[in-house]
Length: 182
Image (cartoon, rainbow, N blue to C red; front, side):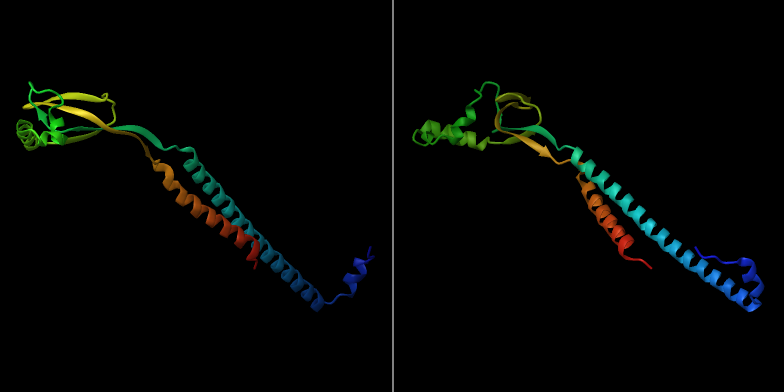
C-alpha cells in the first residue's frame, strides 16, 4: 500500500528522531500492557461470576432434591391405673353426667375422679385403637386419641442461604466485569 523505502529513511534520520521513535514504542508498549491488564481483570471478574453462579446452582439443587421426612404419630391416653379385677371402661364413669342422679354411682364417680392419673403418650408405632400395659399397682388402658402424619422439614434447607448469597455475588461480579473498565 505505502511504498516506503527503508534504506532512504535510515540514511536521512537523525539520532534525536531515533530517540523519539524509541519513546513512541515505549508508549505503545505501556498502552498495550494497560489494556492487557484491564482485559485480564475483566476476565477474572467473569470467572468469579461464573464460579458464583455454579455454586449458587449447586446449593439450590441440594435444597430442591432433598425431601421432607414424613412419619406417622399416634397419641394415646390412659386415664389412670386400673386394678386387675376392674373392667377396662371403669374410668368412663368420670365423664358420665347420669351418675350424678344416683347416689351409689355418684360415690363411685368421686372415687374414680380421685384416682385419675392421666398418662398421655405419643408414639411412632400403631398399637391399635387401644392397648393395655402392665404397670406397678395394676394396668393402664390406653385409647387412641389422635393420629396424624408429621412432616419434618429437611435439614438441607439451610443451603438456600448460600445459594442466594452466591447468586448475588455472581451478579455483582458480572456487573463489575461489564461496567467497571479502567
